Amino acid sequence: CNFDFVFDLVSSSSSENMSSISRPLVSQSLKTLDSVAFKAIKEKSYDIAGRVFMTMSLMLSDLAQSVPTIICIDKKQSNKNELLKLSSDINMESFDLSTLELIVSVRKKVLISYNAQSIFCFCKVLEKASSAMTKRCISANKGFCLVHSYSDSKPTILGETVLVSAPARIDLAGGWSDTPPLSYEFGGAVANLAVLVNSKRPLRAKCRLIKGGQGILLRTESKSPIDEQLLESTEVKISMLNDLADFHNPHSDCALLKSALVYLGLVSIDSISQDGSHCIQSYLKKF
Image (cartoon, rainbow, N blue to C red; front, side, top):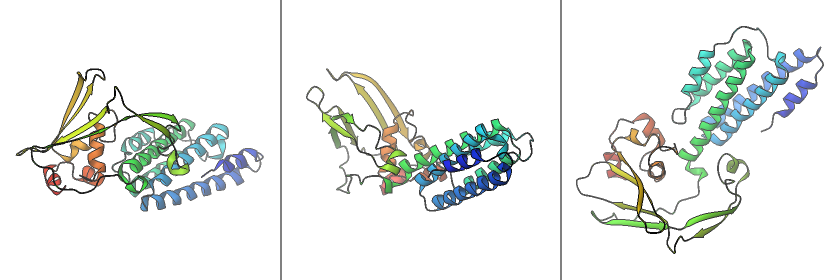
């Protein structure tokens, strides 16, 4: 998905032919990208939609910086408040076709009422949209993920604790090549070693069902690798679906545990955004 030829053709045009060549070319290029984005959103191909937004951002920023007159139709002051509102409205959970229609509408206004700074601000909006699509890929589309080893088994006995452990990992080569959006377009491969720390598997998780409990209590702990003395801990109580809303934020408390619950199918992304005030208990009973 490379539109560098648009910039090359426009920048190489003579001043006499620039207006007649550049505007139709830029307009048709944007329409093509729009059609791909709409189709991708409809088909939930969020990796493609994300690449479209990034391609559009790069093309507009290059053109605005190098040959600003090609986009200009009327030098009126653009509405920066509209750009700020659009940027605040873009998020992973609620991004849909109406959001894309709004992006296209605002883009037309920005390009008609030309202002270089506004175009660069709009490009930032497109970058945010691309980021939202990448997050959507990771969080909501299991088709891009390897099948996990989880399978249905007999229900855990009340009061019994299930404990799992895993070794630490050292990456030798290819680190982060298996992460979006790179992995969606080119694939990724990481060579790594699984290692023990002080002859022990340092990563551990446990789960316990208790009678009469309500909701889910998540807890993360950091312990000394030498004597396993507790260094710090964090607890989060999950009572409503909204309590899982920040599962995709790596800086939120117990983010990895929240992500695990979503990935295992306890709740869906749409349920969190649409039914956030619902109690988690009914989902636990079905799960």
